Image 1: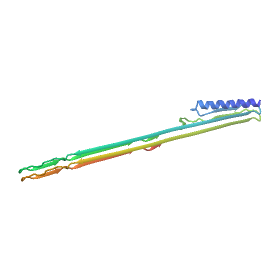
Image 2: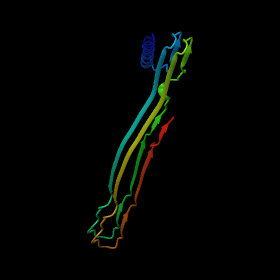
Image 3: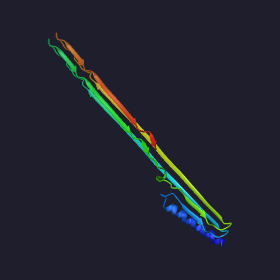
Image 4: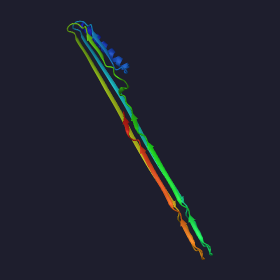
Length: 201
């Protein structure tokens, strides 16, 4: 009779473990060990494991290459004769280069296991004299969040401007010779904004 009771209790334990495996959203066990005979041995084991794993990776690579080449020079007014004026004027050069790069970060809102445990309901009652009743309950919670950001930004800008190279040579006469080169102006702006912070809630 004692052996029969022990095997029966083991069967209850196996059924309880299977129920926990196929219904993980409940995370609660109901165990009743009751009305067993004198000197019976009743053992029930319950193990519940709750695991949440979140992995996020950002790989951002940006390459900005900009080349600006401007030339308003190279004008010629040579070998002029007479009393007239000679005037050579090169206009200005202007360039505006703007590179804007924005990269993202990682945000994870983690609710461990995606569920709420409701507790275990264990009842041991009405067993016979000198019976041995043992219920083992193990609940384990584990949350793992892994976030990685890799950001590489390369900005390369080349600006070449020329308003010179004007020529007014070998002019004769009473006129005035005027050579004017315009201004060269360039504005380069490289802006990199990284959202490389990892946020876990």
